[in-house]
Length: 246
Image 1: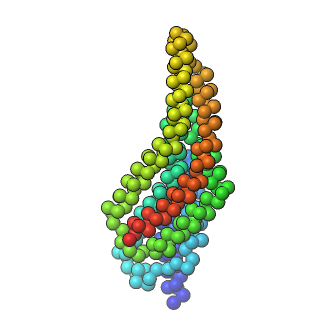
Image 2: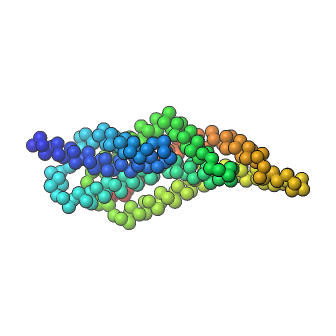
């Protein structure tokens, strides 16, 4: 009896780890090398160890080898939807700044990394990591391990909706920055035109310096929006997982 209970606990730990694994992998991808993929997976395993106690599977499922293949695939899909939906603000902020930073310098400037890192520090200081873990553990209550069916059509629709939301949010975050840079280019073009085109201000170091100044001035307004966006995305991620498993 004790061995059967321990086996059920271990099996539950495995499925919880599968659901959390996409979050760990995505953490490594979004950090751009700051968090190695193996560290992200290690954090996922440690978190699974903290969330799995008290969860178990039915004895029938433990002996049914055919049951495990769709069960693992289901947990992986649920974890992927949650991770992608919760990562919307980070992906959108990175896209918005990356689009704007390309014309600033000929070489790649780590401005997008700076914005994302500043936003991450702000969110962590406000307890965003606790909200993420709370929502992730809430999905284990909303959608119990190994129960319910998951349709491929619903999964595809959820992923497409998340990608569309990421594009929309990136445009919303990027418009102020893009507009400021466009006004800078327009102003320099007008000045250059009135000067007879001899100065070529649009290609001068002055343009790069002013563009960097705009990035510095826009850092606080854009990153200050991140905590509210993260809170909304975490809430949406839990809702998408619940809706997907119905």
